Length: 481
Image (cartoon, rainbow, N blue to C red; front, side):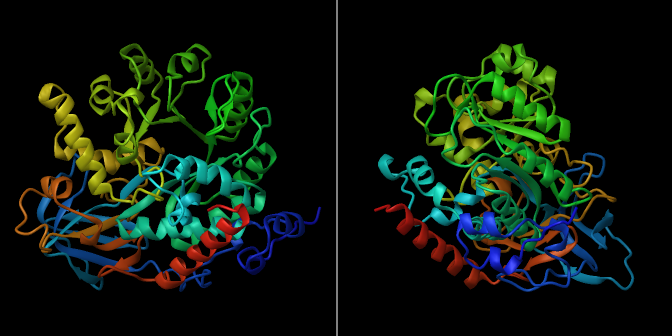
């Protein structure tokens, strides 16, 4: 049977959602971006070469290797070759790491990237114009082009903040072309991550996600070392929920069963009453399930999560904004119970991507609530933002630590900037003092994507202008004030 293709220029050039989905069949994703092809909104991705970072304060996040107050990291063809106090690397480009912390890139395990271009519209101080009303009203008007532009904007911010892996929680996949557009944005920015295939905003609770297209995306991503596939599930329960969608256990079993047959990870918000006991009773907890927003679990449920090896992603800023009645961030309780945890941004409409602030908030809230009764030091918080995120997404064999043999996902954080200097303990500096502007260099899979605080490939001005255009057009289509 003839395999149809989609024309990349048409998808990203502004066709309507209906027109794109109906007129342009889908591509094999691997053909959309290659090392020699410039993405929309930037130059070709830099080649993977050979270099060695010299003289940095190296935090490997690998307990077998430890830290080096002055160390070297050797990278070749996208892989970490060696780490040590002094590494021989004849012929390799030398990157001066003095005055920096060299560490694994941050891993963000839950981010609704498709909402990023709605920043000019969403308000944090007005519930009538807050995140949920805006995304529910404007989400149905997204074209694949809007999805591409918004995801690309969020990923550009992620790179500038030192994030090298993102779980793209895509709960507005309106058509196969929208799915392809979001994945294309991930590829064009050079980001590692998981694409969490979700349902479109406004889909009736009794309608399943497009399971046929989920299988198609799984086939298209076969062999892709940078992007994996999961599903972003609607909430679980029998009561209608106009904000997120709520589905019955019958629908859960249908959609999760299809995902598990494909080997795709599953992620689920648990805002509101905890569904952990229900999921455990129905045999749905497992190591491939990531829950989001740990606010209302009880001790018995945390024991279930530990037994089933189910993880929790914490979004510190958004969760800290919630009223006390919504619960508290249960970082200490989860760590005490041995539950896998990670950290995330959630969305970047009224929250910016700042893993340093995320760690800082978790530290402050933990000390305020629990203190040293459950020990969570600054090193543990950096683990949460790096290697624990890799474990959560099932990619700790590839990234999350500066271990020889793993892929080279690393960042250099300047300690000579005025907010960081004079630098002391590196973990204390990262959690207590650092901010995204201190991130000097970002490397993903051996590609230097930012250096000296500047993008190596992305066109900053175009990324922002395109996102602003989409925001303006979406507002007009939706008739939003």
